[in-house]
Image 1: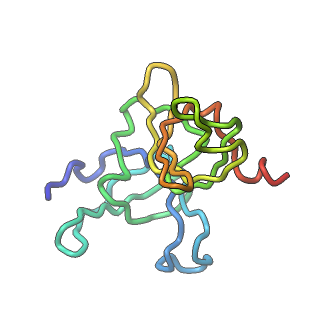
Image 2: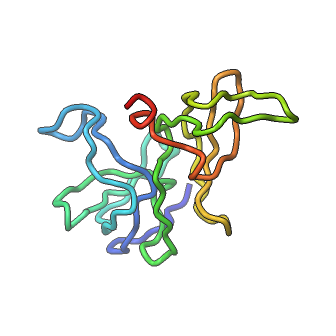
Image 3: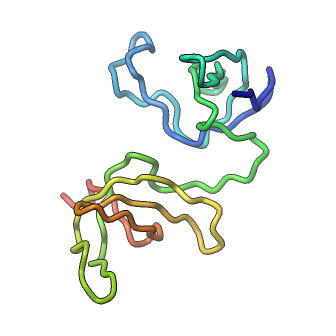
Length: 150
C-alpha cells in the first residue's frame, strides 16, 4: 500500500462520488462530485489498513471529500469524457448475439462494470447483462435506462 499522490497535487476524479452518509447536509446517494472534476490533495490516510484514502479539495465546487486511490488520476493525464460510469444502469440499443444466437435482446437492461477510455476507436464499456453475460460494448450501442423507459 503506497501513496501515489503528494500533498498539493492536482488530481482528476474517474468516478462519480455520491454521499454515503458521511457528508453532512445532503441525502444519502446525492452526487457530491462528478467524474472528470479536478481537485487538490489535502491529506493522505488509510482505511482498514489496506486502502489509501486521499482528502481532496474540489475548489470550484467548494467540496472536500475522501477518495480512494483507484478513483484518481493526475489532472495532467489525458482525459476522455464518457457518457456512462461504473455501476450505471444502461440498456442495449440493438440485439446482441454470440455466434449467431441472440444473448441480449434489444432494450435489455445491464450494469456498467468497467469503463475503457483509452481505446483507439473511442469509449467502450464492460457491461453485465442478465444470464451472466459480460460484454465489451462501444458507447454508441448503449442508451441510458431513462431513454429506454421514455
